[in-house]
Every structure is written in structure tokens, then in C-alpha cells.
Length: 340
Image (cartoon, rainbow, N blue to C red; front, side):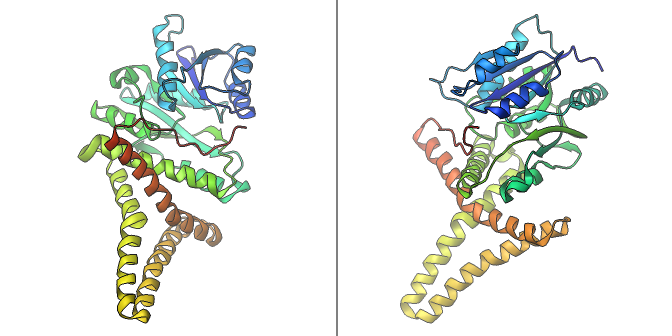
């Protein structure tokens, strides 16, 4: 497969060794641009030392992954020397599979209407924590036409131009936003059967996982706020679940239990126990579905508990989105990873 029509955009911020693995994994004959977002760990110097073109974002404007990707692909398109028909986006904490670009190009050439293709993204160290393993499971979406891709994907330049790229202001959820806008223009996204990237989430602490869940809640809220009734139906359902389990159920149940307790302490205690039981039942339901998917009961139970607990973090993220929108305040990045 001829790779001359492909260019790679890598984005990163203080990824350290992860970025070095990423850049070294890209085939030497494929032109690459690295877009750096204020790194202080020598990332820029390393990229330049191996001949990778480097663009540094103006950090006075505010960093988003969306803006970094836009800067990268537009630089490539605006420079005739690149002559790229396809753009492979890859996050700086990922390593590209050696066979991926050829497989992705074959899929692109097979269907003129496909805007983007992506494959299996795996976690590098899923056994290091339950959080890493959950990420590995999250990446494993079904093969076929899908609603959205993640940060790693091969895009057709014509599709990027048609949709005017990513939305610069989104601090999370920029990929589903782009894919939704592409679908309205009669493009589609396909997940193909092929190994694409190794991702290093490196989530080893509950606090980091909580921040990631909070960012997810922000993304759901921002997507639905922006697109309303035309937003992704699955994202609308997720947001309703976040609001119910992260706010309505505990608030209404807690208030009811307190009011009943003022009349009868035993009845109030029973009502409070019923409130907790609601979460226990939900954890069991999620765990049962996961176990039914072939996972062991230990992972399934931990998964269910973290998914339900995560509703509180997600609701905080959604609240941050709504408050920022009401106050016309610039959104601040929700980061969960420590520098490598």
C-alpha cells in the first residue's frame, strides 16, 4: 500500500517516554508533525532531534486536544509540500502498530464515503490497575459502522475540510462532536478489525480515575448542550443516567429519609437503607451484564461499583459544563494524568 498519501499528526503534553515510543513507532517514510502543548519535559527537543516537524501551541489561548489536532492537520493541508490525502491522528501516549496504516488505507480506498477508520486501541499495562483494565475494555468497540471514533484514527482530508475539523473550544468529547457533524454531511465512520495503537493510560490511583470520570461527565453535558435533540441518542441516555444516579436519586431519597425520620426514626432508617439498596442493585445489574460478556466475576463486580460511583464524578463534570455555559466562562482543562 502506497503511504505517500498519508501524514501523521501527533499531539502531546509532557508525555516523556510515552511520546518517544509514539514517535519511534511511526514509519520513517510517513511525514509527521508533532503539536506540543506547553511541555516542559524535553518533548519538543526530542521530536526535533529525530527529524519530526514541531508546532507549539500558543498557550495563552488555552489548550485543548481539539485545537492541537486542528493546528496539525491544517498546517499539513496548507503546505503543498505535504500533499496528504489522509491524516492519521495519534495521541502522544500511544504507540502505532506497524501494520495499521496499510490496513487503514485499504479500508479507506474500499469505501469513498468513509470519513475515518480506526481499529483496536489497547492498554499497554491493563494488569497494573482496575482502572487501566477498564480503559482497555472501553476501547474495544464493535467492528462496523459506528457513531464516533476516539483520538487515534485515520481521517480523510476531504472530510475534515467539509466539517471544518474539530471544535477548538471543546475540552473533552471533541471526537463524537466531529463525527456527528460529519454524519450530517453524509460521511460515516468505520471501526475495522485490526490492531491500531497501544495506549498508556497509567491510571493507578482512584483520584486520577475520578478526574477522568469527571471529564467524561463534562463531555456528555457539552455534547448534548451543543447539539440538543440532534445529539447522539446514546450520549443523551448517558447524561440522563448521570443526572439520575448522581443527583436525583440521592437528593430525593435523602430528603425523603430525613423527613420520614423526623416522624419515625425506624422508618427513616429503612428508607435510607432503601436508598443505598438502589445503588447496590444497580451495581449488581452492571456487573451481571459485564460477566455475561465473558469477564470474571471479580472484575465485573469492581467494574459495576466503579461505574456507579463514577456517576457522582460525572455529575460534577456535567455541573462544571453547565455553570461555565451559564456564566459564559472559558472552560478549564480537566486533567487526570501525571507527567511521564
